[in-house]
Image (cartoon, rainbow, N blue to C red; front, side, top):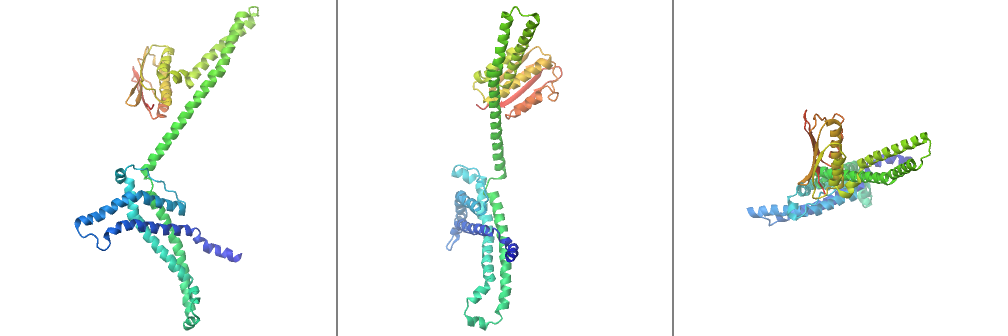
Length: 413
């Protein structure tokens, strides 16, 4: 046990070095294949004219560019299997012509033609160092394999062999350190040149975030619909039933004391008010008419309920996505509510139409103007709701009016 405890720190630099050495060895073999493609035209009897020299340069480069995806796949498998490093493949470029024009292809060619050979050269030197250091560190084994008369003829061999053994041991430690450094350097260089570029990674991340946000919006919209159905089919129906029963009690129970009749009247009135408030809440969550009949019908309902004249013009040949419809509905609803509360207007106009894949929503009133998005009128909330589907929100409200709210939403079907 004491011997093992002493040997453990001495052997720690060699932990996991086998994987690094295997990675380097496979890399040397793969790079030899890539260099062979470039070197073939320059073998003895190679080109000696200008056109043939140009062809000897251009053709191997084109072959290497065409074979880059295969070579890169082999290299990525090397890092994955030997080092456990996963390098994602860049987005496929499509046809051969597009692949030859793609920036990712030439990043891979630069690796196979420049970076890879340099690292392979370093790997070959490191492997030779392993071999030489291994032979030197075991020199006593080689000496004792010689005939006895050879050892007797060289009496001072033990001192020389001790120095050679120490040099070999130092060489093994140096080879272990170089193997780790070289493998890590190769992995970093491959990740930059064989994988997606920083711009491609950012683009992929944006796509992932966009898809994730779309999923969240869809889930939130589905949850609002579920709550609306539960309230409409559950609590609201019970309140309606209770209001009907109270109304029947008022009509049929004529001989009740006056105090009891007042209690029933009050309960009936509060039940009707609760039904009205719950109906408004349900419409605010997700109006059923929006899902059943579309945005045009839902906006017509808003216009009819608004306590001032509202002109509505809707041109929607194709229904937008449900999330976009919901945002447009709530934008118009909140904008008209702000007109009623703050604008002192006599009229409002709503225009909804599609223009080149954009759903345009414009709400105009003839009020006093001066609307401030930071003034607590709900305009900041509208801007955030519009931004949730990558839309744009703008408002023009000079003092004295008119106020114009303009919203542009991506009109995905």
